[in-house]
Length: 130
Image (tube, rainbow, N blue to C red):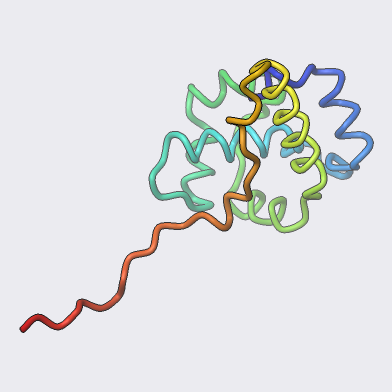
């Protein structure tokens, strides 16, 4: 996903939104990579799994530019609670527009949606059988 957004645009977006203000280790791009990595590689995500994932060789390879050793789950929690969502919103919109341009005439097949409204519903009760 990040390959569709040039480095200079990501950096300018970080400056414009102020996402990295007072963030030395867990900058906006690192949080985005960590969230995406954990969504793809773990079925059950938590702050502890994010802490462990940060230290894996695979994530370190993805995060070579910003890799600064270890991170505590409490730091991830604090960062997630205060990070500016505008950064992620702008990245999302840029990616959607880029994918649309790459699809050409098939742009109607690309649909924007908010993944927070998508959920798996499992009934908590079983219907009575006769």
